[in-house]
Length: 66
Image (tube, rainbow, N blue to C red; front, side, top):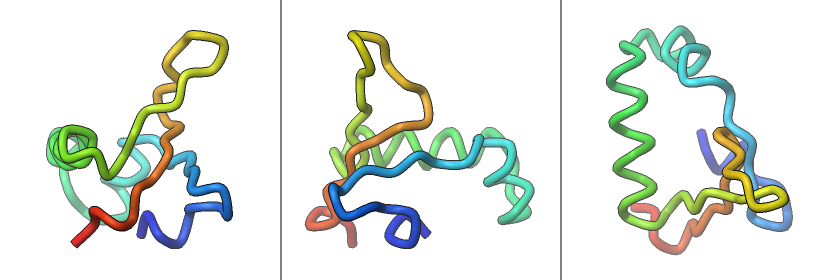
């Protein structure tokens, strides 16, 4: 799913965690854990806008994705 939303610069703005949970029929907490795991493994790298972390914006390193 991340690949579908990633632009040519390798950046993605994800839907809200609740929206992802609704789409996938998973719990909000499960989606939060998955996103945190992707951040820890450096697949999703948070983007800072003017020094502030944009909570749904990430740079994506698809070379690390399984």
